[in-house]
Length: 188
Image (cartoon, rainbow, N blue to C red; front, side, top):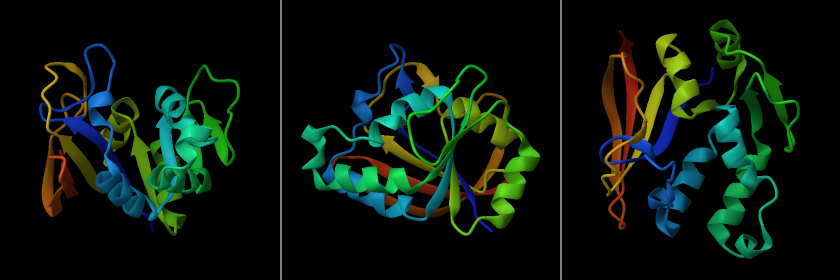
């Protein structure tokens, strides 16, 4: 059985995008990117919304100027190997392999995916993650806290959800980012 993991880079004040929609402050350096690549190898399926898919599809056909960067090229291979499920009511097609569209988030379908998975699943993006968090589907939260305060934007944690967490791992990187991995003890 696979775990469902909610994971993103955030600002210290808990935002995944700033008020202008930017997240360039969260660009990982070589050390952090290599670590994220290692963690990502345990994933077989990515669940994401349309906006996250539109951001991540960059990895499907990595631009030539990025192919010579080892960690970027490596992550592109990892991402292309994922099964990807995009939740969208408006998308009519996808531009990546191993990708399908679902019109609505169905907690029972995700439970069934977890039950037969041999690798972990990720849920990417706070809008979609709130559905999984509310349904008690998320097993682990992994947050990469960047050394910046952005003052507002898109929050990592959806409002109105209480979770008891157990710290399983932490690591500090040379660029000041701190990785925190929590097991979800009990959704409330």
